[in-house]
Length: 504
Image (cartoon, rainbow, N blue to C red):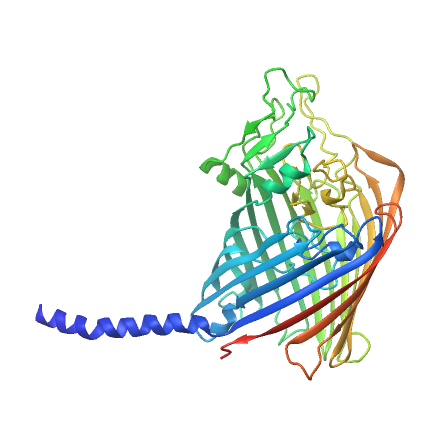
């Protein structure tokens, strides 16, 4: 007993000193940033690329402004340790946005070797695409404010043991919650359109990379991501059994939110409260197949990628449906030069959607005909959106553009061509240009008699003076043309200052 007491007396202060050392290092490597931004212009809507692919920090209003401040600590500050910890808080005050105050990010990351547990809401990068130049992902993009979630992940490609660096895996599984209750209530106020509250979010993905850049210049990456919105509470529902509303069907429903619903989100199954005789699966399920090929050699780089979108089970399985709806992309990266560092071209098609005919099984006609997928739209949750912004690709125009208060995607059958270019002419001066031409056929249910077109332009220049470390200026010009969003043009100026608190 005496030996135990002596050992405890020795080890206890040692343990306290170790814990204190671990806690004290969390104050190292914190980056702070403050930004002020203002936009002015004239026309029907704010320039498209002023509004979209900004993690939900966009607005359709022509004149707007925001003030942003953040403190972020990346887990890579502990890159030499097995245990790594990161965290962040990011606050925004805004004028002429959805909200005057936004908690944009609040999260903590706990990583042991390659595995990370992330808790909270955090901005996450696009999968397998150039984030600055791409039009965005089809299932998960960078167009909405991040959702609070619990996420277990391999955030970076993990080399599978005994493969001699030829095989690597990246994956995640997450459950979270939507935070746009107030926005949905305000947007649909005075209408009888569908809205929901307190719904949950689930996503999962897995990507396999084949190739060793040290041995061979070509690598191949493929995988799948799937997402689901489920649970919560819904108003103004209709009964699918007769599509007109049965007399005994309550349009206000508390949706399934128990343990089974979380399982049905993970393995698409179950049914919704208004499915009636036409049972499908519980919640709003969708996803994408991904394929990418990369080439690297002596400073040059080239990539080809394709993303195929699917709703529910439609077009999920290869070879059962025609995979006509795709996002194709080509990216070329150049050796260091003063003209351009990278260029991206993308072609998007979503006009097929399994075809224009749909029929559920009946006793008279037992064969089911799959079609009319109606991308991003759902008979309970309205659409694949958060606070009005598409959670996937913004070229399927977000509900935020609807003036009647209906949470729906009215332009989900599109063909688009998109180009992005960026470069660094001088060490202090960089630029980015985006140009998109899109044509919409509306939806199968509400087609446009005459296809609507849109042309969106962004020209952006960034200046980071050597004489003021941490200070940066970004000036942007944006323009819309065509019948989709009307004509408009405007300018945006951002001034930011960043630095380190106790940089290691």
